[in-house]
Amino acid sequence: MTSYDQAYHPPGCECGSQPGLISVQEFLVKCFYPRLIANKENREELSIGGIRSSVPLPFRRDFLGKEYEGTDIWDASPRHPLLCLDGHYTWNHGDQKTPSSFTINAGGLTLSTLKNKIERGDYIAGAHFKHWHNEKDDCHCGMGRNAEEIFLAEQRKAALLKRTNGTPVLQNYEEVYELRFHVQSESEGLAAGIHQAEHINSPPALYPADLEDTTSLWMQSRDAGALPGNCAGFLCFENSHDQTNLFIPDVGKIVLIIPKSRREAYLAHLSALKEDIPDGVEMKKGQAISLQQLTEYRQGIIKWNDSESQDRVKKFLQKITGIPIHLLRSTRPLMMEVHDRDYEIVTPVSQHRLSEFAFDVDDEFYVKIRRVRNAPLDGFRLLLGPGIHSSDLDMMGGIEAKSLGVDEESGGTLWKIFVRGISSIPQKGLWAALHVNSHHDGAWVEVFDHGSTVEQSGTRLQIVTKESI
Image 1 (tube, rainbow, N blue to C red):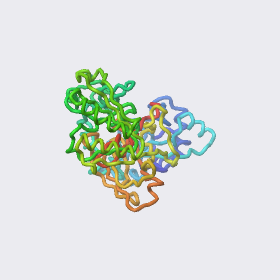
Image 2 (image 1 turned 45 degrees about the vertical axis):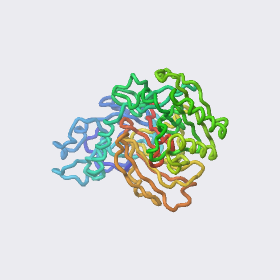
Image 3 (image 1 turned 90 degrees about the horizontal axis):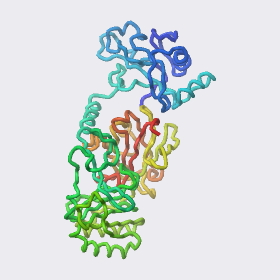
Image 4 (image 1 turned 120 degrees about the horizontal axis):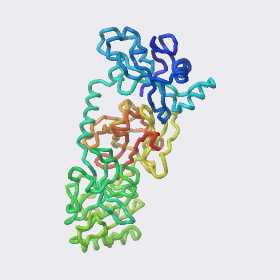
C-alpha cells in the first residue's frame, strides 16, 4: 500500500483554509473537523475504524480550482477536498490523466474516538492519506498499475466468472459423512459455504453415482484451509496409479466411502492397518441420506498423529491406489500468523472462526509463514485472492518469488516461492506485506506445497470486514 503524509487542498473548500500543500494533521484539525461539526448536508457514509459513519463529502466540482473545469474530475462525485499532491503539481491542461482524489485513514480510529482526540489536541498516530479507491491507476502521478498489471486483474475477473458452483465435500454430522458442495465465494446467487446438491444451479462436479463402483478417499480438513473443520475434501479414488503426487500431513484423518462390492476387500485392508494403528482405524455401516443410493456401503476412518503412523498410512495408500511410494510425500504443513502494521499479532475474529481475520479495504497487514515443528520452508506456493495485493514479493531478500499469473479455478494470483540458504528463516518465518483492495472480489491468502492442496499441506486465511464481526 502507498500512503502519503501530504496532499493538495483545493481553493473551493468551505473550511476556509488556504489552497496548497496540507499535512494529515492539518487536514484533520483545520478542515475535516470544522466541516464535520458545522455541515449537516452533503454527507455520505464511509467506513471509519470499521464502522459506517456519516461524514461531509462535497461534490468534487464544488471545491476544485477553475483549471480543472471540463476535465473528467469536474463532476458531482462526493469526495474529501483533497487531490494527489504530485498529480496536481505535475499536471497541465490537456494531459491525458488528471490528479486522483485522496481519502484519509485515521489510523484505525472510529469517528467518535477521532473527534474526541482532535478536541483534546492529541496527535493522531498512524493517520495517512491515500488515493481514492479505484482512482490510483488513472492518477497523473503515475503511481498506479501498469498495463500488464491491469491485464492480470482483468484475467482474475474472467477466472472468477468461470468458477464452478461447488467443490464436493463430505460433511460430518455426528460421525455420519454426508455429500455436500462447498462454495468458496459468493457466486450466481449462492452464498459462500456448504450447500446440498439440489441447491447447485449448474451440474455438480460429482454425483453419488460416481461413488458406486470404486472406493473414494477424502482428507479431513485441519480447520486451516478453505473447508470448515467438520468437512473432508476429495483426495483420490482407489487404483489412482496415474496420480502425480499425494501429500500426507504428519497429523491427519482420511474418510473412505466403500461401495458394497468392495466391502470384503477393505475389511481386510483396514483390519491389517488397525494392527499398526489400533486406535485410529474403523469401518462401519454407512448411513448418509445423501448417499442412500449406495446400497449397503461402508464408511471407513483412518486417523494418525505421529510420523510412524504417517508412514503406515502412506504404505496403505500405496497398496490401494497403486501410487509409487516416492509420490506419496510426507509434509510438515505450512502455517501463517497475522500481524498488523505495527507487527503486533492479530487474533482471529472468534474461537469459532479461527481462519478469519478482520481488516478494512486499504488496510495493510503482514503474514509470517513457517512450517510446523520449524521444518525448513524450502519451496511452496502462495495464492492471493483477487482482493489481496502484494507489491514487494519479488523484492524480498533471500527468496526467489515468481508470479505464475492468474489461477483459473479461483481467480487469485499464484506465486512460486523458494527459500535459499537462510538458516534463520525456518525459526523466524518468512514475512510478507499484504494489502486489502476489496472484500467483494475475494480476500483470502493460501499457502501450500506445489501439487498439493491447502487441506493436505497448508493454511488459508479469510479476510473479512470489521463490520462483520
